[in-house]
Structures are given as structure tokens and as C-alpha cells.
Amino acid sequence: ETGVTQTPRHLVMGMTNKKSLKCEQHLGHNAMYWYKQSAKKPLELMFVYNFKEQTENNSVPSRFSPECPNSSHLFLHLHTLQPEDSALYLCASSQQGMGKNIQYFGAGTRLSVL
Amino acid sequence: AQKITQTQPGMFVQEKEAVTLDCTYDTSDPSYGLFWYKQPSSGEMIFLIYQGSYDQQNATEGRYSLNFQKARKSANLVISASQLGDSAMYFCAMREGGGGSNYKLTFGKGTLLTVNP
View 1 (spheres, rainbow over the protein chains, first blue to last red):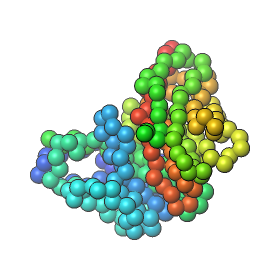
View 2: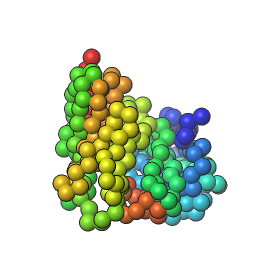
View 3: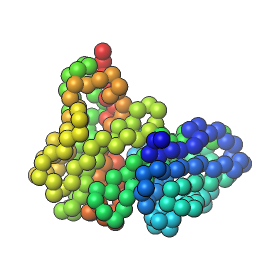
């Protein structure tokens, strides 16, 4: 079992669709993150959850709605997206509160909005 | 000013040779962490190596080593005995502050490494 698993790996959706991205971590970490990686742009931190509580929303449009039911699962609900939202969405987890706080990433969901 | 600078958009290396990927950083915080990640074309961001600002020795992980020069604010990644599977984008990142509650990573723009047979 890989440390951080993301599904689906690829997603194509229309602007009026509603879809969800799922992330699951098997590392026993207490924090989970959503990042957006667009072509030719640095990684952008979107949301951070620590022990299920959202600790950061980096001015993300409301068409992106995160959900963290427990420390192991993180969802990103998508609705009425725009073509510029097409990107690679990466999930990560880490152990906050001690040590190096290294973030471990999943393989990402490559999203195309038509 | 950019906090993480990777000046090499692309690098080429022959298989089995060593290669150095450059990274300079900018921070006034005495406590920080430096990270290198590898991103193959499949998209996964793979953690490679970590260096803390107070670590006395350069970090090493298998074929990866980090050449940490604190006074010059550089944290170059050295890959020894390159393999074809090392072809990927490599990102340098920095976390300012200690690792307890600080989590924000600033990433560089990356270096695309191509290993030739």
C-alpha cells in the first residue's frame, strides 16, 4: 500500500459537472494538504487540515470545497469549474507538531475542464 | 525576491555519471528546512532528502546527497551514478521556521533532468 493514494488519476469534466477527488493516507499523519500545480507555475497550496480541522484556505474560489472526515481521508469537491482550473491536483500528508514535518505526496489527479 | 531559486531549467547527464542540481534560498529565519522532491512525468511528487538549518552534516540518502552551504544559502542536490529512471523534474523547497507547527513550503520552479544512455 503506497503512503498517499489519490483517486481518480485522471478526470475530465464539463463546467456544469460536480465531481470529487479523493485522497487517503496510510502514514498515520495528522495533517493533510491540497495543492494545485498548473503548467509553468509553482505549486500552490490550497487547503490544510490538521486533525480534521481546516487551518488554511489560501483564497481558493468557493467552487472548490474540501472535506476532511478524519485524519486519513481528504476530499476535494468540485462544481461549476472553469477551464483555467485544469491542472494537476496533489494531495500530501505530514506529521505536524514534531520533527521535520516532511510532506509526502500522492500521485495526483490530472483534471481537465472542458 | 524569490525565496527559492533554481537557475537550471534543464540539465543533461550521461548514465552512471554524477550530476549537481543547484538551489539557492533566501530567508532571514534562523530555523528552516530544505527539501528536494522528484516529479516524474507520471506526476507523483516524491520526497528525496531533507536538510535542517541546524544540521551539522550534509544530508545523504542513498545516491542522493545535499551539499549544504549555509553562508552561501545554497542547498544543491547531488545525484551519484545517474540512472535512466532519474529523468524527471526536480524541485527544491523550503519551510521557514521549525518543523513543529510550520508547514508552508515554498517551491522553486524546478530543473528538468534528462539522463542519456
